[in-house]
Image 1 (spheres, rainbow, N blue to C red):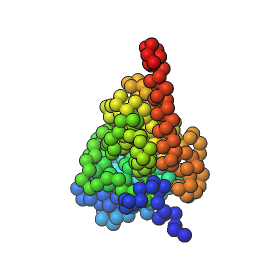
Image 2: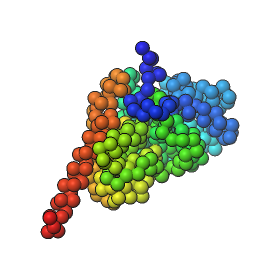
Image 3: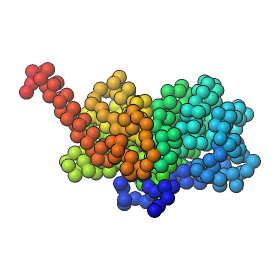
Length: 340
């Protein structure tokens, strides 16, 4: 039996190689450490999980292991940032955003300190570690904090350029990664800009807006829909905050229906952010695919995603439902105008 650490996430794109975002993160840290002498890496006793060991070997004087003391680590990160250093505080998403929530809010975001909160184990994709380690509320918590930027890369190719921009950005940032190997979506050389969504597939019937591991599943769903004669646009919203309102509003106006997909509670995450924005700028039918306001359970992600309505077929089903709402809305509008 393949160990859980090596099992893939449930995305279907078998034509693409798979790689963990954590591996790309660890390799990029070494490169950034050579470029930024003021870059320091803080760990909460999980350097093996976040792949920061290579940075520690290359720059031992710039690596600090705090043990399982996330609150202390975030407070120290805040202090270090006031000296001109760029601290990257590394731990699991649940422990950073909940155990150290007050420290991030009141001592980092409030003072707008230049601290980077770097986390893995976001969402049900964590799988076997169960609900205590499956961060399904973290994006909602972090995007609610003033001054915080929230970044969720979709694959290992996206990690280096986004991480480089995060390090160069002045201010608090939350960088969210999953645990398991995911399909490579992007080609080397793809341009990434913080705050700017990427259109991975054009389409005119509806738009699927996704983040993280769900971007690959959104592409799988779009392939299925294409076989059914439905033209689905796919957006990778790698920056949940600040949200690319221009791309989202354009998708709403041009396709008239939106499905969001995230490995996160449907409340307060990407789906919530998109729905909030569209309610004020371009109201269209919206359906959210994600964790349905419940806790997860321990298990293989390939089993958990269908169990919680988050697999590619569930995105396809949501697309059909939102298209029915789009059609019904058009019918009501025509009737209100006295048209048949």
